[in-house]
Length: 151
Image 1 (cartoon, rainbow, N blue to C red):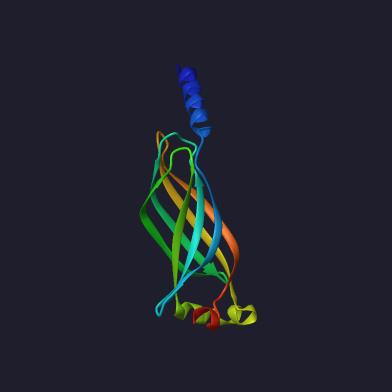
Image 2 (tube, rainbow, N blue to C red):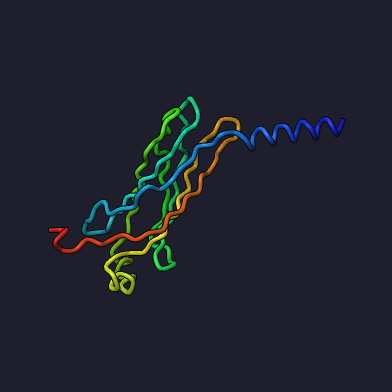
């Protein structure tokens, strides 16, 4: 009897492990908006849904780092859902206060850009499996706007 239960358990584990899951990638991180309070960057995330029905996104969590330090983090609750059998583009806004940018002056002064690492966690609600988080990470650099870009 225990052998039969063990085989059934292995069968279920194997089937769940081989279920197709959504896949995601960060396609771009760019300057979105400059205000008096902060600089807002936008991360464009491409998510493919292999299922024939839409999948709700529970939340998107992010951590934006530069020079090894976290400069912005947060969560976006209930940002919508993934289109059935298609690729969905998500825009993740990241607001960075100016006082943090000032503390990165050494990195910025060298080449007028911010070397960054963006970590995202895209949590979706999959049938049978439950909540599933797709971890993403992107490294790069963002050129800062000059006065001529602003005015």
